[in-house]
Length: 469
Image 1 (cartoon, rainbow, N blue to C red):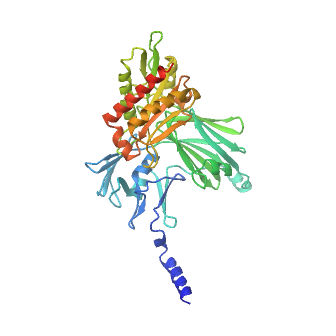
Image 2 (cartoon, rainbow, N blue to C red; image 1 turned 180 degrees about the vertical axis):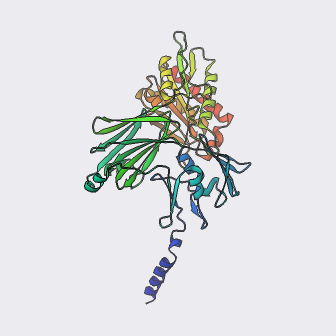
Image 3 (spheres, one colour; image 1 turned 135 degrees about the vertical axis):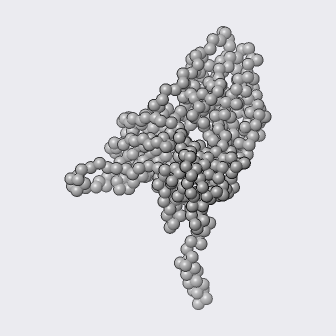
């Protein structure tokens, strides 16, 4: 009897206090149908008065730049002409120069700024929602899919249950390739603030093959960062609508671009992107004496392409350039080596222009310098990437010199299909010299000592590779 009484009391407890069972589970954040990965230290939370969300994770997923000023406790969110400033503990924020009231002052928790959910909608132009049952924050920057039909069609045309399927999604060389099963006519549109290209696939759902192989979530949604495009930063995909069934793919852009689609071979839809803006012409080929080896030093990103933004708001492009200039300077005394650097300042170059510069100069070696980033602060360390088998020896030698001087975790030598290592014809390597999203890595990456050591190690590796014969 006592046993049944205990069970009854436990069930009654669950019914009366259901929220206590899930009290330790932080709310989820879903942006345009895709669940955002949050830092475990300071995720979204429901304070009772309002729902607070981490402004950095939302902003960066929309392509905004986030800066933190420790002295004034001010967080700034920037994108084009849009500017938002908030101060921890103050119940007013500034949006494009206008003061607005907040439901609650911003909170600083474990280095993360949490702001009221309603302000995210007002300040960033998003549609916001809160599902108390599932503890889910929903954010939408995208308009609903609109099917244009006349009244007669709406009455007489039955709803088809035979859906097409999306089997795969791949992006390379500014072209998106969608593997499909069925007849699909994509609908393309553009959005601004921030710049995005939208690809809707009407009458389409995710295939089981896709969900098991490429999706991040059981519903088929997911995203991936793009590192080999001058204007695409991220691609997201989700089941945007069930009625009518629609899969939506979103290109997050660093600046305005256009897209057109075509049908490819083997049941593929091809989406080709191009920039609306004229890019800078790279410098002409240099004149080198016979027998001189040409080394291309490529500091990644530049101009509007800031690359990764570090945990303290620093830019990857600045780190890359600092190390690249040091490498160039250290190679100057070698009379049998001619160094060409793709950029000497905050110039913006496309990936293809970097490749063209290497080909024009008939380079013997191509070394691209980068910093890494991930959606959580956990990953850290150094890794060396190459594409073609001809580049493996260069990758091995550079990694051998660079890894010991950094003192960071060895993430290994890996193959990756990156534009600058894939499209070049000489041995080409991309170095990831630490994670800007990791507090420990970032703390040393912007020091002169670390950059000098990296530069010297890169030079030592290049010299050994060129003299191996």
